[in-house]
Length: 275
Image (cartoon, rainbow, N blue to C red):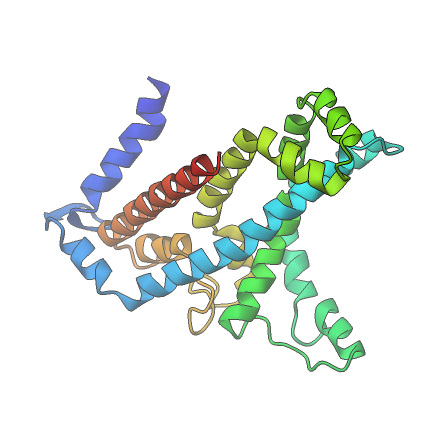
């Protein structure tokens, strides 16, 4: 019942709206798949798709690898390990707006800390908002900082359920810690890895707040003057709530949903095949 009200109904209703020429005034004219036909011929949509997938890769892959290593370290007999475990949670409880503002200042072209450090080694200042790759890196760093600790704790919980006698037997056989990690730990926590990959994919495809705050100024919702870091969620918001074209915006929203389902399925099949 709850899923039907808050999950299924909005999904079906959005699909219905996407089949209409729907403006701010209310229900509009039924036009069938016209919005989708227009969408597939829209260069701004494909640009937003490229940006979203690019930042998804730059954020998800390093994030999960670092989380695995961090969880492995926290799983060792370190001193004050409880304090360290609490510490990795701090980025999660920090306001996403505060994170966005902070990293926008860190990556500022004229007075940012990153460009200051680059200057110390003789590298020219980078205008992080001006180019696709530089803006992708800056925004992905923001996402990595915020969510690495969350995934690390999920991996840590999974690691603590691995039987210790497996490691003892491997140690007797002469296996190094690195070999134990890849041959015992990673296979044993595969369900947790599948979960984090799928959840990170869903979150990455819905990326909105970080690039919006990073953009600043009048071009924020457009992802820069050349749309160099506009994501699909930003493009959907622009069409639906700035241009008040709810039918087209709903079509973009449904394409986001379908892409998420496709990528989640691909990730699941890849991870299962490696089992």
